[in-house]
Length: 107
Image (cartoon, rainbow, N blue to C red):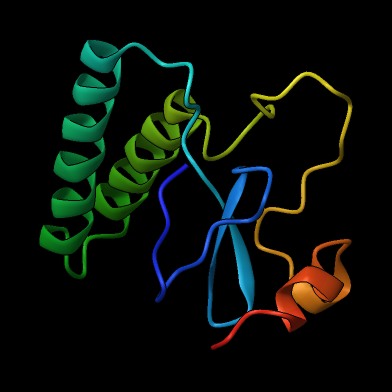
């Protein structure tokens, strides 16, 4: 589990927190080569979104590529854990079971 004082990880390693919001982390079980390919696809798709300025068709296609890469990484779509815990991706941490833990952090 990677620790960052700026973007703390939840104790279970499923999320990191930015401005009080939970963001799902990539699936730690992904093979390094597969992760590398997906990250490259994600970065290319993000550049395509940026470069599609004003073209709604190109923007929509690029955003779909971003979504596919994020699903492949496990950051969106079905959860990568198997214990049946719900997904709190994009939820405010204060509205989740992580709220009490978060309040103890020295931010």
